[in-house]
Each structure stands twice: as C-alpha cells, then as structure tokens.
Length: 133
Image 1 (spheres, rainbow, N blue to C red):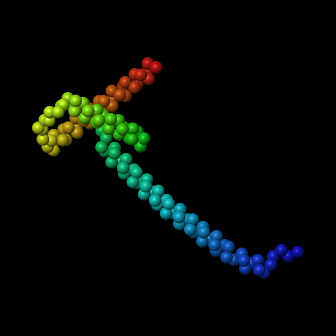
Image 2: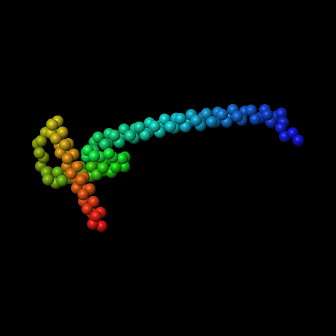
Image 3: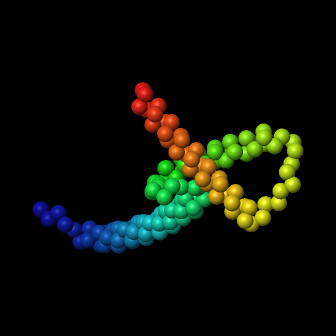
C-alpha cells in the first residue's frame, strides 16, 4: 500500500517554486503599497500643517485634524461675513486706499484678533445654551 509514486515527486517540485514566487510578489506589492501610504500620509500631514499656519488660533490650541477642518470652515464663514458686512457698509463707493505691506500685515492681525474674539463668543454662547438646556 505504497501511496507515493515516483511521478508525484516530480510534479510537486514546481509548486513550491511558484508558491515562493507568489509570496515574493505579494511582499513586494505590500512594500510598494506601504511606501505609497506613507507618502500619502506625509502629504496630508503637510497640508494640515500649512492650514494650521493660515488659521488664526489661540495659544492654547492643539488641534486635531477634524478640529482644524471645523475651525477652517468657521474661519471661512467669518471672513465671508466680514466681506459681506464691508460690502454693505461701503455700498458702491470705493475707497482709494492702497494696501501696502504694513497695512496688509495690520489688516491680517486685526482679522486674526477679530476671529479669535468671534470664536470665543461662539464658544461662550454655545456653552451658555448647553447650560440652559
């Protein structure tokens, strides 16, 4: 009752080689996928870092990615309201002001401060609403 045969041994030889080759292919695909994922993550982190530099923040802020996105949306809304209010105030008349480098810096600082105040008022108002409900 010999279950082995001489022809069975010769057929078994290529199978381990194919299996090894497939394993190496899968490993190299995995390595490449890991490299692409690290590059994607690094690119995303760099984009969030750039966004955090643009958005005015408080010194105590240590923002997660979702907090950064939410704050950016609030900042865009704030800027929209500032522009809309400015348009309503100015009407069709145009001021002949020339925004130089110092004026631009000052305007940015004023906007940053105003946004921080607006943001804190929003936090205060929402915390008061939470307390009253």
